[in-house]
Length: 292
Image (cartoon, rainbow, N blue to C red; front, side, top):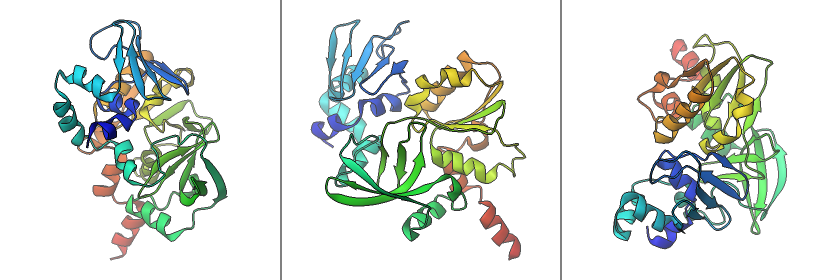
């Protein structure tokens, strides 16, 4: 990785990897508490359109490399060495033609929305051990920069789609959370939709009653859900086992009562879907094993 490649990576993702979440955001900008020192009011701003930051309390700013040089107190080589080990989604997708991380602006057209049926996508779902949860998904065919693509689509509350396949991770349309309501007073919150699908696969096995569900589609969306959380008496959290997940649990627990951190279920794994893949067979596979 070189500086040019590192500076293209979403600065929001860089901050997320360090456990920093925005206090507020919109489509154009995101505001954070000073990541370099303690402060009570957010003065660190990201301009999303140019992927640059500015710290108003100190009058400094710049690109990703500038930020990490100050954050790590290191050289450019030190920054690039650190970045090489992070496996940023937006860096991995730089090798996929015409695919960008999260929202690819308006350079796309949705061609068709179908039930899940493409063999490659169904196989990918089976690999993620959620092949029997297609009722929550749609098959999206879209055109971007004069090329056609298709992927697994998970709809959000702004009529956008989180799109996933083996090679890309993007959002078509406005980035937003996804809520699934059952008229419950309890809410379960997930970081990504594969975690939600994994939970639905074991909900009965865990002897859990159905509830309302909220999928963030990015932990950075946590600043947008405070009013939603206020409507529930009980909240269960199923975030990733990393610094960003720890911070998200802390934020929600400090703002709400009756919050339960449920990560003990998969404490030795990256996330709920990782646990599902490696340790907990799906109901389909359990049935097959019983027949043997």
